[in-house]
Image 1 (cartoon, helix red, strand yellow):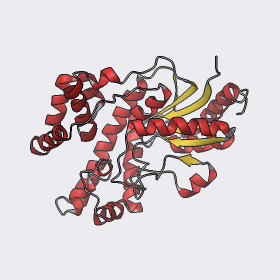
Image 2 (tube, rainbow, N blue to C red; image 1 turned 90 degrees about the horizontal axis):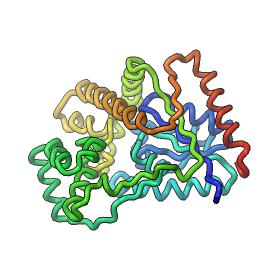
Image 3 (cartoon, rainbow, N blue to C red; image 1 turned 120 degrees about the vertical axis):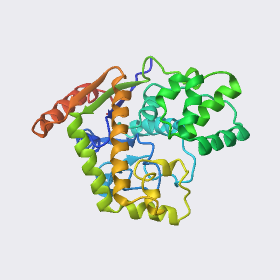
Length: 317
């Protein structure tokens, strides 16, 4: 039987410190990093997506960052195909691949080889569902999905209108639920080592609040303004991302800036909670609490030794 390819995955809620850990480990272990974040694929969207800086990317090769424009289509199926190919390419170069990020569906689509529906599209149905969301709100559309596919509805946020519509569309066209199609392999096709970072909730929320303030200071408002000036519609999937969606009403003169900032912080905290819930249900994640900075160096060393012991004996790594 063919030997499985090694793969390291680092998951956890936003602002917990995944980027810093990945840079340290990838430098030590001759690694390359694949972004597992559904927003970092977009060009011109840098501050709000918390991409690794150009300096950080010059130290360790990064992939699936800045690969499409904000109005281009991108899906979990695209990510799965690209990341799978990248993992093989990184191995061929004798290096260790890392997937790092917080988009659980994207990451598991690779680590456990999700299979997705190839059901056709019904553009008339999609337009009708879009009009429903505009007229009655995204929550009404989400409730409709919950009636036919509660498993997928639990996974998808009401604001993820594109995927909510696709889930309803699959049911209408096939009579089958999206959750029936998204088969998850029991065993990963990779020799997998998954690292989960967590910290005390109050501390994490404090870090999130500080990060949002730093993004504003770094120019997030101007970043969103430039996207609107370039003609990107606020209804685009990319523009629904945290930090972008909330600033549009401010830039349109509908709400004050402080209200927009407070909304970003609140929604990001809720998002972090959902991320943790998603990752907690994945078996075999090695969890590390990074609440205490004094413990961080020993945690890094522990993870490094575990990865070295597991993978450095593997040929071509």
